[in-house]
Image 1 (cartoon, rainbow, N blue to C red):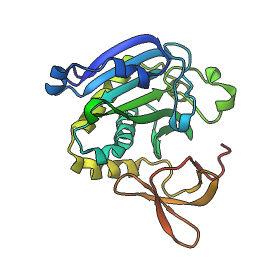
Image 2 (cartoon, rainbow, N blue to C red):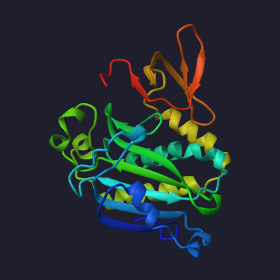
Image 3 (tube, rainbow, N blue to C red):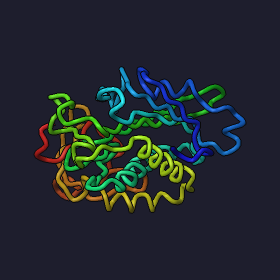
Image 4 (cartoon, rainbow, N blue to C red):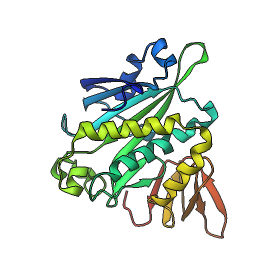
Length: 259
């Protein structure tokens, strides 16, 4: 598994949500002071997992996927915590690069795609503790060994798994360790290293150079994704040549994707 000095790791059979559950297994103060990044909670099954905007997360049969959350106190100033989704996506992408035939791409802001379908999602939330102390919770779901036939009908064509795409049964423990080691490396880096993170994400980005449909509330716009901004914003060129960065959106889809 991951470096022993980086994470306090817990595993349970079932939990409502790992993002909620990890808050009950935070490391002791002396462990945090000794350099431990935080706690990790893995669940074999998640009964009320959630994605961005309150969407439900498909957890798959017990023991088939990776479902976990990390509770961390990043060393960066809190104004930079919006970068956590991007550095987590990069850690996932790097880990999946080690799986033959996976060829992962990062879809802004919080998904990893393989062969035009979602294989992983990220949900970062901020938890305020006593005395104004802030904690970041990074939730990660990865479809690992679920078969194509076990993916719900309404997600067929939209979601996939590593096993379905590579034809290989994946060692979940090894993959989890690789991800946590990579995430620890990213979190321990200076905030000044984020330019390098963005450069690497640009090289493996699912949307850049492609036409996208963006929905924010009831407003739907069409443009071309052209770059990432200094804080990971998606820069879109709109009709007429106006370029405007997106820091968030309810939905971003490639033109031609049905949902």
